[in-house]
Length: 335
Image 1 (cartoon, one colour):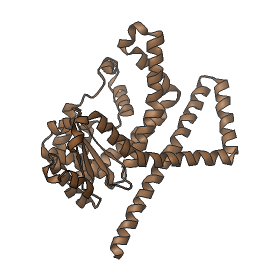
Image 2 (tube, rainbow, N blue to C red; image 1 turned 30 degrees about the horizontal axis):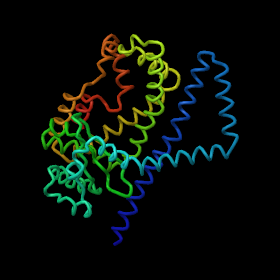
Image 3 (spheres, rainbow, N blue to C red; image 1 turned 45 degrees about the vertical axis):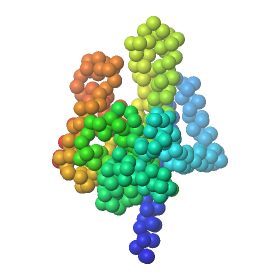
Image 4 (cartoon, rainbow, N blue to C red; image 1 turned 180 degrees about the horizontal axis):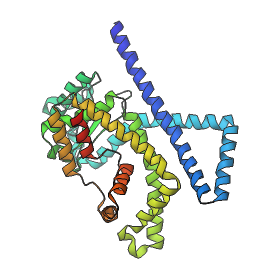
């Protein structure tokens, strides 16, 4: 009884730490964005903008009520992402894979209610659930649910767990390309994120990158292409200009911080996954994913190839949320 209570307390302790880590990112990154915007305005002598930002900072920190409201909004955002991300992705999968929904062939779960509606033993993906269950016991975590996305892209991700087990989403393209041993290695990697409580913080990271960097880039890209470069919009010139402008003004430092954290989480998950599966299968899975995924958008290949190698490596490290797969293979072989 005492051991069981200790395990429950430890589980919620880890969840609390994950929430605090994610909450820190939500509060910290907007401050970094504004700080870089202030530095850029000072560098280019935009005195009106820099004075406005400085006065806003001083006023913000002189008002305890505003600062408390800022902290409360950050906490609410963390809770919303934790609770809503699973529902959002399941709804998205339902819209993308409507043909799978009537017989639940795309969703494998251990809950008795779902099992009565569709026997697990007759599900074509049940073997993945059994693999995940075996590795979850090794990592001392709850067995995840498994969802299969009908997309032919080669990809996998894991969603935060709170009231329910974590949810691992595998694409049909990944299942088509990889052998069962390689699929087991991919599932082990995703379960390692669950064991280290990376799921919430990585969801926060992805959302912050999307909102603080790529959303303004995309909007500015539309404005430049459709207003100023209508005849040349297929050349993607507007995207390059908007990326440079947004990153220069306020996106470079936050992007570097967020992607650095993401890459460290990925390398740590790789090392944990190596303890659960055959190392050769894990390396083989990385190579198969590397061969199936394009490394860069085709429209930007010419720009990157024209750069000196050190600059190209810096750009790749800046924009990649995952370490380059050759680097991951080298890291796991040295572990």
